[in-house]
Length: 124
Image (cartoon, one colour):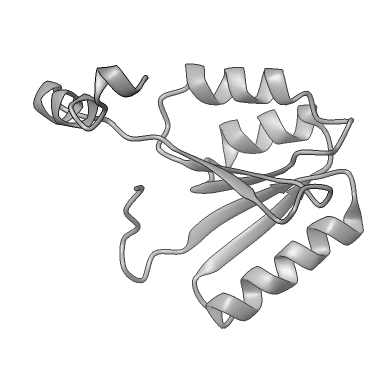
């Protein structure tokens, strides 16, 4: 899991063309944090999302999975190809409330081996 410095402001981008969706998420996040330790920006299209990712370098990106103006393949390719430490959450209002989180982690070879050892090959 990405570790945040205590007292540091967490930068969050909400990627959605729906102002209602973005404002609702922003309100929830601000209530949870007591308005102290987060900064939030909205990005309603791919051009602004990429621009904000490059310039602002957020800690978390929340993507409206159902938004047809956001090319999920392009966004995820950008995320996978980049090396920045950030979390990505895919949120769908149509789904049953499930949230998919991608948490970029860098593992040592020993950690990767231990992680792979969690799987029993006869169960795959």
